Image (cartoon, rainbow, N blue to C red; front, side, top):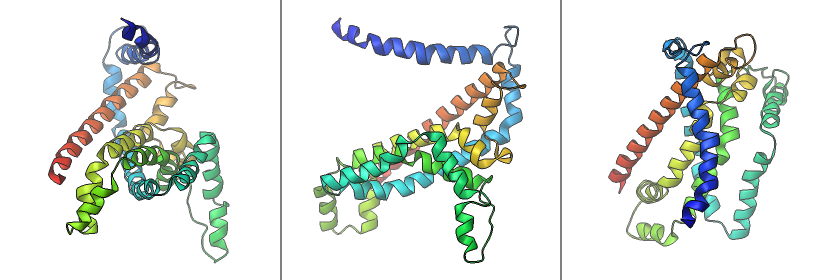
Length: 269
């Protein structure tokens, strides 16, 4: 009885901030402006298939880049002495203390036509390059803003990897590649799964980064959802339908990834 009592705040939180909002999204997705049941909103989502595909594709690219960059950094950080680990961890966390919009504005200043990067290239007679309002700029913004969410779970799980296990594999004649793919990667799979989830989910639904760094030509699904709830195009029913489809797509992507990682883990082990 006492355990149920302690769980009450969490249950109330889930009800107010998860179950009720999700119920409202489902309700608006399957009703029209008059509250009548309809599936027209769901069928209209098909008109934005290309935007959905592009959003998922850019999110996948950003997630893979974050994983490739974060994995060696997290491993190196986990093998340092405690005081060095704290310094490196602080360096990872410091950008997150700054407002999300300010971080993105900073990249606008760097990437714009008269920005610092083009001015640097100009010293060598190069450019100016079109760095902003491109898909590359959107991916860059995603990687910069979300890579800490990949580093932290990887670092946490790698701290638990016993160095003796790695030394044993090396003593048994395993090459560096074998140690990496048959020892380190399988042991760090929980961190990899958590990191991919924490990066992919916000990346696929982002709208601030794509709006500020991608321009109007690089509209993502998050931008479309945002447009349905503001301005002259106000249509919460269609916005809810797009949100619902996006949630289903994210769940499918994550379930496929989890299934693949389990199978791959079995082969590696």
